[in-house]
Length: 145
Length: 145
DNA sequence: TTTATTGCAAAACCTTTGCATGTAT
DNA sequence: ATACATGCAAAGGTTTTGCAATAAA
Image (tube, rainbow over all chains, first blue to last red; front, side, top):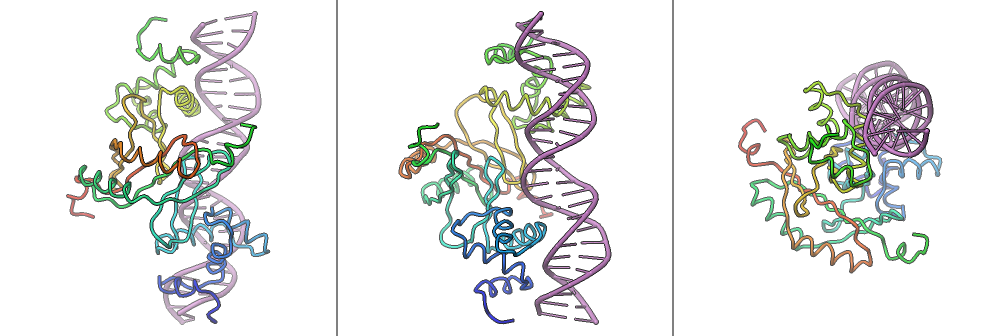
């Protein structure tokens, strides 16, 4: 197969087979304006381009990519689950409860204290989830609230 | 109705009617060893005492109690949603990924930095969710891992 | 060829909702 | 009496799974 996609390496390196649906799914992350995408988002985006990939395949691919470290998954309190490409430093999210917009932030001090707390409690820390919920400046400016 | 339960006041104060199912549900929190309970946990605990309350009623009651500030809800990455009595200072959770145990912790520094981050980004912070995931000391001690 | 992947439909979950019945106020 | 709460069963939304067909290695 010709080396058309930069993601081909990454998929192959994980031991997964390089398939059309998998490449299409990753291409959505590459080309999409939004960095944080749900399974549904991916399905809809592809469908808009007349690329039909079954939801089951999308869920399976996302799970595989997460396990392989290509994607990161985050779950929000409203049940939304979003994926993003795993690149750059670790970060957490701040979500607008009005418009649903997602932004990222990094705070080393919070990271440090999390590790400290886990240690104090005798836990081997595997991961964490930190999400801030609030109204973004744009939504705060609107009268109809 | 006789003043058998301390929760009667609380329910009445919220404007909700004081009903048998609601009292039973809150009594589970009062009497249960575990502080963090799912809808299912409550259902099962009551059923074990031959108190049958429909799941729909439990879900509706928990939602009402949360809105009224009697309970707090937390959602974990694995989809579990747990409720706990809203008392004492705000706290976050650390969850054992092996046995599912839930513990609480408080860290003022993290709280402060969250507010700062939200402000910097122009958000009006409404709430946050912080969950640490790891293996607890008890599970770390087991060989079969 | 051999083994993994896909797509579909069915099932599994968890949670919510409509509606008739029952209950607190 | 009146408004609210309950229970059941049905429906929702999201994610998972079994299985035969298909494609990558």
